[in-house]
Amino acid sequence: MALTSGRKVGPYEIVAPLGAGGMGEVYRARDTKLGRDVALKLLPPLFTEDADRVARFKREAQLLASLNHPHIGAIYGFEDADNVPALVLELVEGDTLYDRVHRSPLPLTEALAFAQQIADALDAAHRAGIIHRDLKPSNIKITPDGVVKVLDFGLAKALAAEGSSSNMSKSPTITVGATIMGAILGTAAYMSPEQARGQPVDKRTDIWAFGCVLFDMLTGTSAFGRETVTDTIVAVVGAEPDWKSLPADTPVSIRRLLTRCLQKDARRRLNDIADARIEIEDAMATPAEAAPGPTPRRWSPAAISALSLGIATPSSCSGWCATSSEGRRRGHRRPIFASHVSRIFPASRSLRPFHRTASLWR
Image (tube, rainbow, N blue to C red; front, side, top):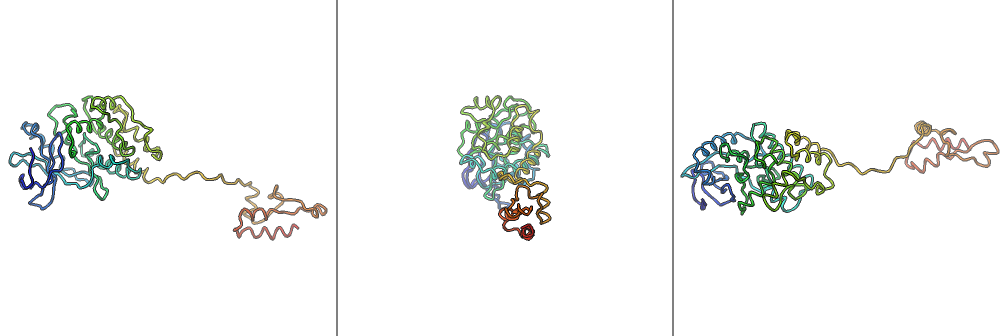
């Protein structure tokens, strides 16, 4: 049901459409009571015709509204005035992560910064007992200030029929100009293997999707996306990502994190997204390893002792001394140790005693 500009839904006045997809339409609206802009998400007729689902959705929406986190798009409430059921959501300005990645792969530092914020949002939700179930780049917004906002938390569960399996066609996707098939493809590429098989899911399904999103950001390509839904599901269940497509500067710890997030067997997958956040924070805090320099000269213990004392002895300058003709006649050796050291350390003031010592040996 398309709404025109100026139409009111309760206290919310429609300003302009923002996007549409297989699971509803989203509008920019003005809250006439509080004087702020919000996002109004109209629920599809297939959903609203079932009174039991509407009632259950209201209960779920109340739980989701309890999430208060800087990286989670807030749910303000549920509006059903004039038989137009809609979710009232925080209006987040900026591009979706899908838009950013579609233009080009992200630099490593930017990708890790975004991933850290996404993991932080997931960690907060998981600790509140809420699973996203539909994490993907089109559900992640990046504000002009570079702040990540994860949208549509828990709506996949809230919109599903009671007792239904994880059906990808029921997963909410809102993208401007997206077709229903495009929305399904976008969702299928981020489904965990257990989701694709219609099995029960837990927070590890979000960890799988997180790994897919991180892979996208680093490579600019989908880890499992294929041309058709069937091929995509087959890849999710049985194929490996193209690990060679990761940038050469990807830290070993991040490569290891990706392999743990994308384990097809949930029992072998990373168990807690907080561990991913910590791994990313450590990688961000660790400076790049410097290129190996030349191998330093090895000094013998005798030479080190001589340098520390500022003197030269025949034993410590073995191989550095020469015997002059005059010295051979007198049985003396002429040390040239100081001159050699001066060429190696020309600016060292501590080598001056060598010159004085050398004069005594002439």
